[in-house]
Every structure is written in structure tokens, then in C-alpha cells.
Image 1 (cartoon, chains in turn brown, cyan):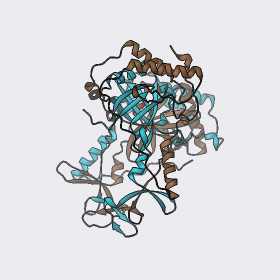
Image 2: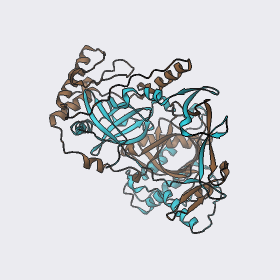
Image 3: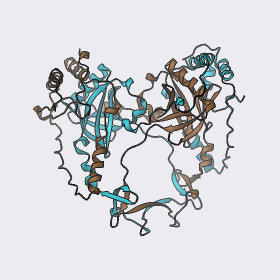
Length: 300
Length: 284
């Protein structure tokens, strides 16, 4: 278990459960460092006072907020903490709601909650089981990194997960995008065909079948360069010209269905490239798990 | 019109839909700049070569990956971009799934898709068909030099696009049974806890939750600007866990009597929603 990023207690009614919070996600992106071109020596970022032109230790750096008149208000971390309208060591559960009601746009980042000590295990389990049985998630608030956060806590089997949430006013309206759209309504037939394509391509969500091929590719580039090989950038694929007319959707849908169903019948996984219409889309490519056949039984 | 972040194509079977990507969120956190405490001057970040102890101009910077301690492989911008391939312009929809099957741990950022040039028909078709079938499209593309696993779904009249973490980036859940035996809750405790959950049940009404901390920080800034001294609160004392069942029963008594809610209108519920910690906590 990685080191906790926060310790405190989970407060549910009058019950306090000592818990630790751990990140549930670890970024596996390849990390680049900045280097100095001539000798490839590492670059260090130094914080320097613009007045004195001297390096400043962290202990002398405070948070500044610029007022409208151009003057600055300086705040220390301790003062900022004083602004927290609630305890910084408690996750307060306020409500229980249906998970399906929480639109995914609100989810920000996920963490794992673990009981902090053995004596906390019983209360931790109690909460996890109760939420699991009631099929509810808990809504609460917590102060993390000097910021108050709205959080959702959910039961995953016998453990608890926490996700920080965006506040409602941090989700933009899509009205402007809608206003710009030209009036267009697909025909009933087109929607029906499109739904049939979707059903043909429907599978259970199995996240482990999607690999980060870009990361793997970059890793190979690094390895071959390390061995002294020259990296020849692959020729840029021709930039796709934006269509000048609206495409023939019905034709493309029929073609897709014929292709998928044909494949389903012959059970062949070979590259299903559509040569026609220059569309060149590939279906079911790179799933890495061979021929995952969509549920043909679902078709309408 | 909002500024689009990316223009490309959504490929869904043999249907190709020109699209534009827009930000769907904006952080409203109060932003601070680093200042020097002694003179209030701005703090600059300077990039310094550690060998020469000199500031390095931007054009002399390159990117490298450390392969072993102190050894770097340098990659040019072009070499990094070459890994992007055609996925940098096309979001290939590979499958469709049900939304409830996606654990929220996978969600990262969220965007809106809008139609690109001559994309209206295809866009509305994809939107309408996803809405009708209640399915979410799973696809991949390269954005910001990083492969993005995405989930696309109908949201209102637009298509929302969520970037997702890859499965190997997810830390597996931790079960308390892995380490310590601990005790199982008693039947009575489970019952009372269930009652408490029912008492606190409500609909999810996101607009009711305001970032009170944001307002508190702006208030603090105003107080400090007017010359007020900010008092630093004492370190909190942690309360003892005490008797679990007694705490549960006391909680049920506090919240009970008002009937099963969901209206969120009783005085007690409001107390719970806007509680600032003044609510008495069990210290037994």
C-alpha cells in the first residue's frame, strides 16, 4: 500500500472511523526531464526573488493574491487553513444518494480509504457493508490540501473508495455548442440502423483489454535510441481533408452492419477495412484479445 | 463560441463524424501566485543548468528520459510526436458499453464534443443512437502527446467525452481482511447503521452544494487586506471512537422522529448539510 496522502477520520452520524486516504490512480506516463542541449546535463528549477535576484527557500515563499488596485495580499498556509469552514481532519458524511444519480461529469479524482488502525476495522466494515446493502453512496465534504472538497464515498466489496467531485458551477454549460449547431435531425431509419451498429459492437466493459499502445511505442523508441539507433520518424500520414459535403450516413451504416454481421458469421477477425468511400475506418481493432464478438443476440 | 481544443474525427464503424473538442469544466479555485515573504516581490522560476550553475535560455532545452541513474536518452519533439501516429486525429470507437459498468475510478477529465465542418448529421446520429441505446462509446485517441482511453456518451443535447485511466494505472482496492482480522460488526450494529443511512437518504442535487471554502478564502483575503490579524486555530483533538453501537443509536435518535426524508427540508437535515463541525460529536 502506498503512503497515505491524508489521515483523519470518517464521520458518519456520531461515529468516527479513523482512516487513511491513498491515491487510487498512479500515472504511468513516461516522464521527461528537461536537459541542457550542449552537454545534456539536468536542469533544475530555482525559485528566485525578482527583486533581490537570489534563490528563495520554500520557508520564505507565501501565497499572494492580487487585488484590483494592483496591490498584493500575502497569506501563509496557516492563515489559509484558518479559512477552512470545517475540520481539516474529518470527512463529514452528509447524505446518502443513489450512485446512478451522480453524473460522471462531477467525478474528479479517486482515492482508496483504509482503516487507520485495527480498532477502526469494525466501524469501517460496518459502513462499507451498510452502504453496499443499501446500494447507496455517501456524499460528504473534506478539506484536502487546503481546499474544501465535495466527495462521494462508495463501497467496493469490503472496502471504501472516495472520489473528489467538481462543484456544480465548475461544470460549463453546453448551451453555446448547441446554439451553434445547425438544425439537423437524423431520420428514424438512420437512428435505427445506428442503434443496430451500437448493439453489434456492445460488450461488457473490460478495462484491462485497452492498453496504452502509445506509451509502449514511446518506450520502444527510447530503447532503440539508447542502443544508438537513429530514429526515423515515420512518414506523417496524409492529413485527412475535411469533407466538403455531408457524408452518406445511411450508406455507411448499411456497410458497417454488413461488415460486422458478415464477420460474425464467418468468425473471421481479419482487418475489416472499408475500402469504399475512402473512409478507411477499422472496426474492433487493437483490442488485443482476438475476436471479441459483440452480442449478436441483442440485435433488434 | 467557446474555443475548441482539438479538431478531428470520431470513427464509429464506417461512419466518420468530424468533431471539435471543448472544455467542459473550469476550476473556480482561488488562484495565488508565489511571493517572497520579506519584500512581497514576485518569485520567478529560473531554469538552471546544474553543471554550469547558469540560467539556460528556452531554446537550449531538450527533453530526455532517464534510463539509469544520471543517464538520459534525448528525444526531439519530432520523435515524440512520431509516436502519436494517426490516432492524433481520429477517435476510434472500439466498443459500446453500459455506463453503470464503468467504475468512477476510471474517469479523469471531461470535455464536450461538438460537430465539426459538415459533421452535424453524423453528430446528431451518433448522439441520438447512443441516447436511444443507452450505451457509452469506448475509444482511443492521442491528445497532448498521450494516449487517451475515452468514454463518449449523450449528455443533454451534446456528446460528453471522458478521458479515462488505463487499467494498469488503477491501484487495486484494499480489503481490511488482507492484514488484520479485526472484528465483524454485530447484527444490531448493522441494523442501526442501516436505519441511519435511510434517515440520511436524499436525491443528488449538485447545485445545492456550494464551495463554501472558496468564499471563505476570498473573505480571508478581504480581512487581511483591511489590516486584520488572522488567528491561527489550535490543532484539533481527535475524538475517541468509543462505543460504536451507542454512537449509532444516539445518531439515529438525533436524526430520527422526522420520518424518512428525501425532501431535505427539515431543520435537522439542513443542519447536517451546512454543518461546520459545530455539531456535537461523540467523545465517549
